[in-house]
Image (tube, rainbow, N blue to C red):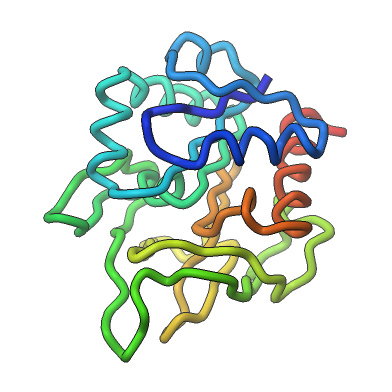
Length: 204
């Protein structure tokens, strides 16, 4: 079973339905003990970084997520689930993240851009990655965000997207996979990505 973490934010039911549509067994939970027993973890989220971290702390879920990562369980972060992996965000003042990856979460800057970055955009693949198996380079995915990650280690960047300038839209290292876009809203390509994560977890 793959645990989808419910901390009071995020498009949980759409993520759940997306996984079930491609035949992957998932369970939405707000309990750390369920995360401990799960085969893998999905952390979705829409909203503010600080609220996300407070929600995880309130449910005593921070330690459960970190344990899962350190124990090598596959992890898929979606939107905020990507951002909280990093050291800190500048959203509403500085807020500490999980600090799994060194780097910051910063706001899109000017240049006549509409903020939030909302709608379909191309994802440029930067590495051979099982999460994107069978998904062609420059496929379109659906985005809704005002902030983006700036990793200190460029080797974890799995994909980028252009919005005024190039930004990191997916990262990968070992058992950790995370994307800025919303696969559950991205039709065929998004469902393929969720299916690929299921294959990463269960090897089929």
